[in-house]
Amino acid sequence: MDVLKIVDLHVNVEDKEILKGVTFIARSDETIALLGPNGHGKSTLLQAIMGNPRYTITKGQILLNDQDVLAMSVSERSKAGIFLAMQYPSEVAGVVSADFLRASLNTRRAKPLSLFQFYRLLDATYKKMGIPFEMANRSLNEGFSGGEKKRNEILQMILLEPRFALLDEIDSGLDIDAMTIVANAIKQEQEKGRGFLVVSHYARLYNMIHLTRTIVMVNGKIAVEGGPEIIQKIDSQGYEWIKTELGIDIEKEEPIMSSISIGVCATKEAIRDGK
Amino acid sequence: MENNIHKIIVNECQKQVVFVDFSQTFDDLEIVVSKDSSLSLRIINFGQSKSGKITAKIEENGELEAIMADFSNGKSILEVLINLVGKSARGTWKLSALSSGNDDKKFNVFFNHLSPSTFGLMDNYGVARNSSRLVFSGANDIIKGAKNSKTRQNAKIIVFDQGAIAKADPRLNISENEVEASHAAIVGKLNDDHLFYLMSRGLNLDEAKRLITLGYLLPIANYYEDKIKEQITTLIEERV
Image (tube, rainbow over the protein chains, first blue to last red):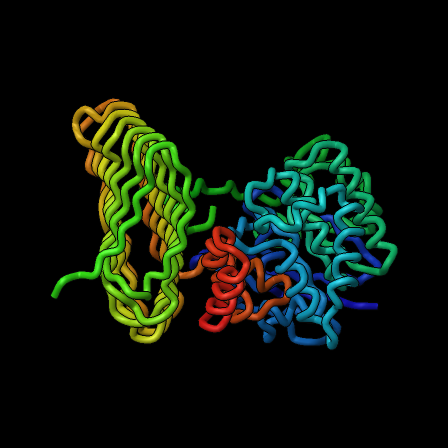
């Protein structure tokens, strides 16, 4: 059994405190739904666990089987068994998916996969995810639709066999067929004893996978923990009941002013920022 | 000193593919693509950097596709002048360049749209390493009367190391209203989000940087025959 411990985690993004003391323990036989209004820290928590340098840990601990995750580099975290399926996977021009996947697989193995083993594994996983195998020879995520990018994230998760998979809005942009493929893949991985932290706004995906627990984050803290029944409540009532029943004021998300204006320079900035 | 000139002339209604090793024997290249003909030009420069000039004249309905892989070392200025002289003349220039060590390489690429319905595309890709300097400059000009012409410039340089200097400042000079013109110039370090993405899959920083840079320079190899393709791959892998 693998255990991921988050202890009093405080995280800043550009000097603004987003996570204000988050504590919980996740085990690899659990699938935890992470809910909460936008801007209240769900993505921040996942990004901080993976080690995105834009997110600064100001206090607290992250432990994987009692190992200090915060002392690890991003690639070490991946090799230790943490996987983040990104909300907005980058399009990386020129980097061929197959080359990238092979490098990712071999970096965690003592002996590299033979070309034959690799292609057999790749072919089977592409089939499972319903992605045409030709995509393996295309640039990573370049020109992919939103749904294709999300399926490609799950494909990587299957290949890399993490202990804990963090899924950030993996269901956004998926039609119902793709959602079924993704949910089935998650269920198969659950059976292999992988732990999941799943961020989504919709009950649909949660209903399709086997959930063990629900955590609701409000104002950068855990407001409510409980079973799957909380999801149905949020799905039908939203988050207002948290205020009325628990007396927690939900801070409104401040609109973030974009530094990007129209025209050529905006394209420049957007490309530079990789958006 | 007289420049040693190499001429390529494609006669009317001909199609030609020409391979040129720029490091050999000549300094300047003069090209004429006659009416209704086309030239696919494949240029390499892998040795010592060399200054020179490439001038092309493209006549009515003619087409030039020029590809250049420049992985040379040294100090050089290459000037490229593509004159779209005839109606519906088309010109494409694609460059993949790497500078490293103390290299100082400059590429000035000019397109002159001199007739209506002409098409010009400039794609300059570069990577600047160590303490080298890499500059993409030049201009696309559309003169008055060259109606319905289209011109496009892309210049992108990745500054790989802190000591490297890169500049990309191609200009557009448009004197006619009924045209399409666009331009993008980007100079920057490797994208942090891309690096994080690759690293989150287990690659370390150096592996991630290398993979992105290879992906940036390597696509040019697809324009060449297998032997040159291998040479390009080896050269890039050695130097990145």
